[in-house]
Amino acid sequence: MAHSEQMSALEVRASMSLASIYGLRMLGMFLILPIFSIYAETLPGGDSHLLIGLALGAYGLTQAMFQLPFGMASDRYGRKRMIYIGLVLFVIGSLVAGFADDLYTVIIGRAIQGAGAVSAVVTALVADLTREEHRTKAMAMIGGTIGITFALSLILGPALNQWIGVPGIFLLTGALAALAILDVKFLVPDPLITRFHSDAEAAPSKLKDVLKDTQLLRLNFGIFALHAAQMAMFVVVPFAIKQTSGMSENDHWMIYLPVMVVSFAMMVPAIIYGEKRAQLKRVFVGAIAIMLGAQLLFASSVSHFWGIVISLSAYFIAFNVLEASLPSLISKIAPAASKGTAIGVYNTAQSLGVFIGGTLGGYLSHFHGFASVFVFCSVLMGLWLVFAVSMKTPPAVKSKMYHVDELNAAAAKKLSRSLGKLPGVREAVVLAEEGLVILKVDMLQAFDESEALRLIAR
Image (tube, rainbow, N blue to C red; front, side):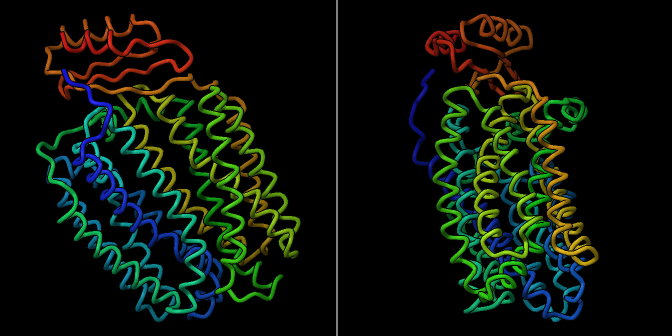
């Protein structure tokens, strides 16, 4: 059996074009974050911060509702068809929000944007179009795209605002989503075969086990808390910067740019240290502690400009480390055969965090003032810190996947036993119906891949 170290040109094209679809869609979600609150206040209904928060968070609710159903429907009706439906919904939502005359219509537009929840389908299509041994690289491309998109949005949002305003940004994101439809049509290859992938898709039969796993629940709470705090903060931060500095919202990129550069520069060595030295829990817990400190600092210094800048710097250092390490922890902790389901539940928790954080942040800001929002975020981070400190140290493993010719159940069981006995193999799963072998390999112990390949090829 051939086992190529290099991704093929087709795999690279598929991964990059699908990562760009993720990026375009995420750009639409993130661009408005640093400026939306100030714009929303000028609309009918904008005197209520609760409604501003609801407008920011609305897409999270519909995304949480439709994410898993979209993924499952794509197994039945085809990946590209479901991506087209999702992107068309996103375009419609962007147009509704862009032409809105009041905040209520913006909320409807944001909810329609979120209903085009194509992320699970895009992940499944990546799995269709990449060989098992290269899938992790393809998923990493998508993860990297999301991080870069978020950072760019905070800088581009205020700059774009002075040229086209928030309605223009909504219309621009609608146009970008329409471009993404063309991307799917002409750049993304058609899969030769569409099938279910345990490593990339949620299986209803495995949901119960994933939801009972207390280690995974800690991570699900974490991504919920991280994004709830992010949305709650962005109800308030644009106002706080404007009030303490006198800067126009169009100039807020001058704060975000150096903050993002510093946070990325500090994130990379932290993640490398965590992964290479098998110290991911230490880095993870440390980042949550920094995040808690940032929220407490926000709560006490939200009326001081430099207090906000220092708080933002600490916040983004922690945010970037956590955003990068959470998916890695999920794949280390989740049972190999349930990884796709674990990621599906995790993504749903993230979307619910966006909705609840935006809504509660708006409510607290409206009725109890800016500082109360950061007290709420501090409580979330404090709880998360307790859960993280008490979690088991994640195994220092990396996943490896290989294709295997279809086997009967007895042969699959025999192969998984043989692979499980190899030095360095912590878990071996052979999914006969998918033609897939998943190994969790100890990063601190020698692993003879050629011996594993010989067993698989027999």
